[in-house]
Image: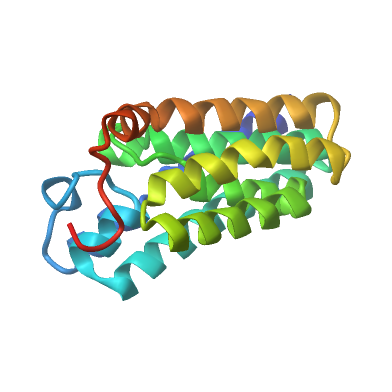
Length: 196
């Protein structure tokens, strides 16, 4: 029991490391006052350039992957791996190190999936890349990729039980965090990745 709690807390703390905030601070800047103010990869790309955006995206993805891997290694079960991955997504969205002002969680969710449901994780990444290339709108890619992830996890990766519960919990959180983006998409006012 104590090991399980410790793994989940550690995973949450890993998720709370916000690379957009860190990289902006290393440049003497505040990501919360730049662009949309969201501490995520898309805003980092728009506000600090391609290299910063790529670093933030990679860091956020690795957080979910590392948390799930630690959960599997220390807990020895797919259920704890997925719970740890979910905890990292929560940490990214509500980071204790950054006054609980976090990002949307999509990249960290994809990282979690790469460990617990690899085909779903790859599918999410592929859909994200394809949709963003076609629309130039990151939120559409994130929403579409995340929405596809659960069916892929069930049908291809054969995810069941508690693993599926944590995957669906992470998906629900990611969608909730995108509620503002969804409203802007409906109004036709959503920001593009570039050219704003």
